[in-house]
Structure formats: C-alpha cells, structure tokens
Image (cartoon, rainbow, N blue to C red; front, top):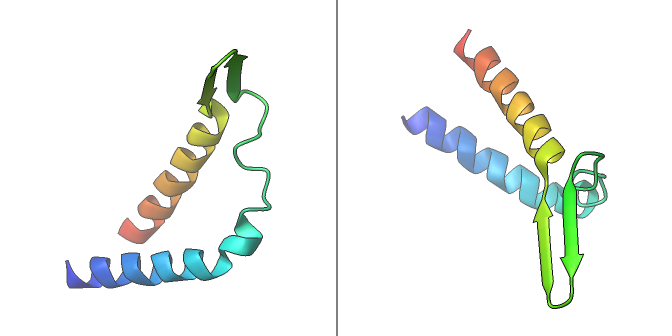
Length: 66
C-alpha cells in the first residue's frame, strides 16, 4: 500500500509539472466527443477521450501487475 501511494504521489507531481505542455494535447477535442450548445446551456460529453484514457490506464495497470 505504501508503494502504491508513493507511485501515485510521484505521478501527480510529474503531471503537475508537465501540465503546461500536456494541456496543449488535443485530448478532449477528439472526434466522437459530444458538445451540445444551446442558449444558456452547454453540455460536453468527452466519450472518445474517456474511452482512450480508460484503455491507457487499463494497459498501464495490467503491465504493473505482471
């Protein structure tokens, strides 16, 4: 458990330091992401982005378990 918390902390710090460059990635504006805009209403559903992130996290966790 301690090792997992240390890895999560180091990952969070790394993402925080790299955020200026990571925010420029087109993640969140992929084909398949749904954006509904009406008067006084905006709904954004990043379906494709969520599937991509889920697949990457699944792969990473699967590799760590091996």
